[in-house]
Length: 513
Image (cartoon, rainbow, N blue to C red; front, side, top):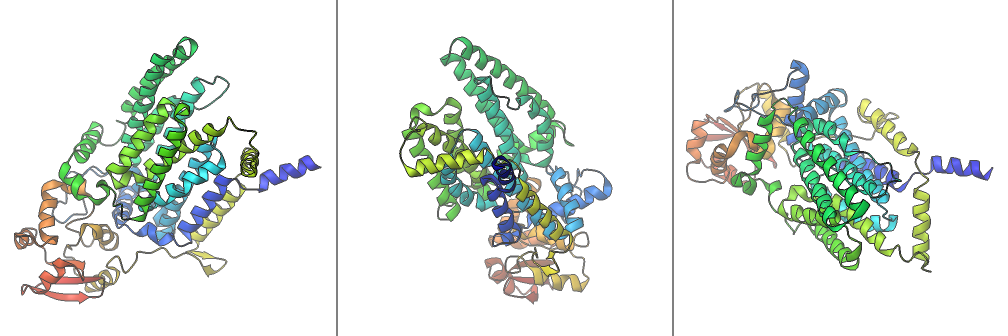
């Protein structure tokens, strides 16, 4: 009878990973964090591009959104995500887009917890690192394809890490790295972060080679064999990464984009984090916790862990867009290293240590995942019923009218005019979402498509530099939607060649006379 009751309890009780999944999914779908997911306009052109893909059953090779560069070659390197998110949008609107993104983010962090537990971390140490990890990652809690890149990166890391661990523990049956090349086919068509897969492969291959020089006997042979497997996996992953609509041209494009110093210096997410912001400050806290862990656990840190920690810290300081993945890798590795450091003291009399041991013991028995499945079903039902649950509205995903020119676009839509619209690059995706195909834009956040020279001309205009009028004339700009309190709006407002067609506290529409 007692055994049966325990079976029922382990089926009904959620694990820590389940709870984290549920809390994040709720907060990002129905709670206070939900509005943040539509804080980036880029999702707008992703949706419209995906709809074009679904309608034409083909992947775009030329642009159709730009007024000045329509028909120019365009590598839509996130085409598969665009098709998926357009499918979701067509059936559940923006509610579905937000719920899908929230699900991916929640699943990613649930896997961070599970993978840390599998690496031997205790629940107490995981929570110590998970809280700053979540806050640091919140800088990019957005409905964009990069969240899918986070998920695949963590899965890719776990396959590599567990494979290497099983090399030295023959009793384990972990996934083989041979599954990585097929996974690369999916990754390379979803997001440009597939490059991270090769970085992680290089890190684990390097650690294997280091182990062959430091070990002897059976350990040396195992490390050498695993290095050969990773070498073959790396070659196959490179080959399968060519299975995308653009072939090797995608790789050249990614390299040219990431190696362009002008773009990297002027695109906010590629610049170093602003440490006045809370996410960057919590990343600093996470780094500090990691350094303390390393100092107290030097002899317990393996070669690959040194490399992962070094890479994560460097990439996090290098660019703000790297903070989430860097934080996740640090949390997984550091939590397991710190837990391993204290395993020589299992007989400690501390009640806290005893409580932590009981929590970890219970976690190993909770595998049902009933409540996450229930919550996913509820969220799915809400999205399919226009955000209503039992007839009551509980979800209303929309673009914030204080951040985006919502009412200004409403005004434009009533005019019936089809002139292209000039705006900030940060608003271009929203304009595409609202006005395409009737109206096109002069700029959006596809900086890799527009290129350095075009963006230099754009920056002349918005920063009110000399030559801005010539740029507007050459591009034949007759309509502009700009932030009401911006410097460029104040300048145009005093120009006799322009008139104000509409204005509200967020945006002003200017029309050339």
